Length: 345
Image (cartoon, rainbow, N blue to C red; front, side, top):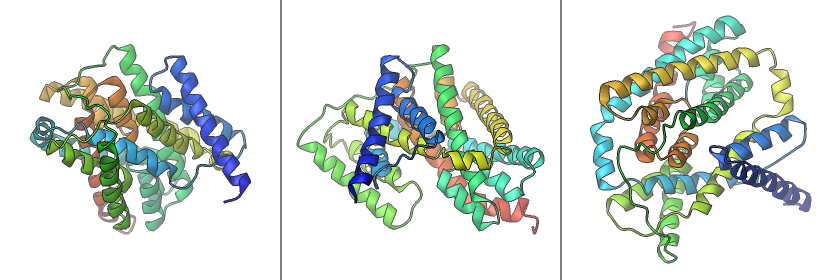
């Protein structure tokens, strides 16, 4: 790696961290995620080349996944199992809302159905872009629309919940383990091993799901190795926020400027439908409305888990909702397109 590349990596991460620090000083919600994301996106859109070192995003996901897994006590695990049917229903509803959003996007943006469909499904940015190309869609608008969805959710829903005072309503209390210098390397080593195994098997979101599963098992077994320091959780947010911000390249956005307004409206429709559904589910199940809003919001699992942690809204339950949705979206999206939406079906 050249000195110029190292300098560019360091500059990019310093800019991201600086954005988080400034947002934290201003008491902005999700400061260490929003700050890096918005500052890096703005600089990237200006034409300045910013980069991240290889493995930086995965490091952020590993730290976050481990931190989420530490919340899965035996009581929480039982609570999640009791609500698995609700999770599946919410995931299927989210896919249905994505289909409605896709039909709107296809009509107004004049794009093919594959591009519209995979732009609208609440799945991962990379996964949906790859699925789109497989079924004859265009990767660039799908990537942009998926990134816009995450940006929209992260910048609107947390702020709205805070303004409404909907924080600190977790359905269960989770004891925070102290940091242990001897146990922490073992904890991270286990997360690294499981994450690496899942990545080797090409499992979606391996570097967040693997560490989450590893830490959750350790916590359920009550091994109590170590807690996750707040500073490392902040670092995970900086790395993830920087990664999202880098997706907003000037050339990409300019090339899709006619698609962009329609994608924004489609995203707002998708978010609105999911939020309304989450509030309805909360009324039926008795779960806190704010927790359900985050559980069904079409943001990424990492971003929604960070939001849940900052707002104290039941991190493991919200993470479980998003895990179920991820697996169903990845597993069903191709089948839905092939047998329902494809012009050849």
